[in-house]
Image 1: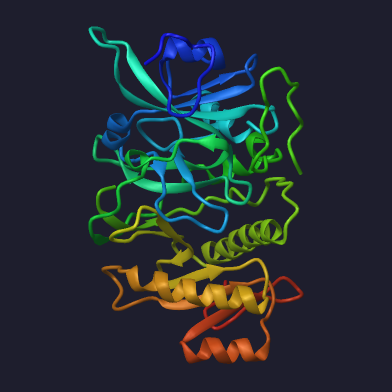
Image 2: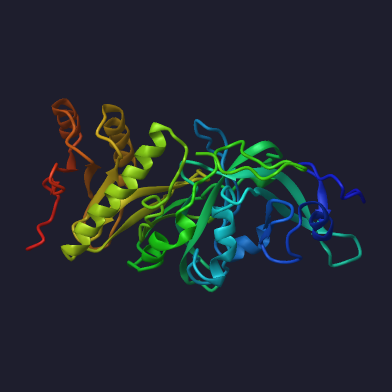
Length: 373
């Protein structure tokens, strides 16, 4: 570790005091915003994270946009939140683009020899994924209690350090686990200002000396029944792409249909899956625990989206195991409008049903429960 703190590059190791000289932030805490330095410093401690039920790090599985770094939000016990004092740090991450700040990630690596002063390795600058900025995940905390945490999905913003020790460990085995329905922060998130702002696009950053820019438009595998979070329904995301619009439509459609199922007295949630050998966590869009029906939603009824939904639901449904139901769940694709006749034929071949929203707003399909039942 060098003595100079004037410049910190990816891979450099510094104390928090030295980091503060360059990037600002508070002397303690995991999420440390700095207005003067246009930065939100994210400190990760692998030992602490594992104790409270999560891992921060790179996913081994890349997508078409490259690698994703997962960073779990603030809150070591109970459900994490964006609201109130407890959600201050999480809001700082979510709003970093609007406020012209760069996300900077550090991981603890040790201590200064002969002292208790911790040292941290700088991974680099990041920005929130513009399509899926965060997901909700069910984990087992240090006290053995299950809780919901916010997992932010970060994309590299320039040069970053991507090394094997920072990759999330893969799941060792596949285990299905039922978690009773819990009402968490859905209603608060839909009205909280934190979800009303624009999200940044990759490569948007504030460099030293420049004015801030306005934002651009578990060791085991587990399958978990959890409450869906409608983060996408109220966000104004400026990434003007068909994928972004589809994600927003998908979130709105899923929430609307979940409301219908709830009104019919059904117990609903999402279904979370970790698969042996994978570092990423899978999540089916909607699960009806009363009727044992698994849904995969899409924001359009295009051939491409129907085929994608078909593959996903055939994959996810293999892992859904509920003690009160025999066998795999009924598989249904949720769409904003009816697909073409040949897509119905394709889905019938694989015994996958369809629920879609009609022009008058009603949901149509064999799996749709009557509100009078």
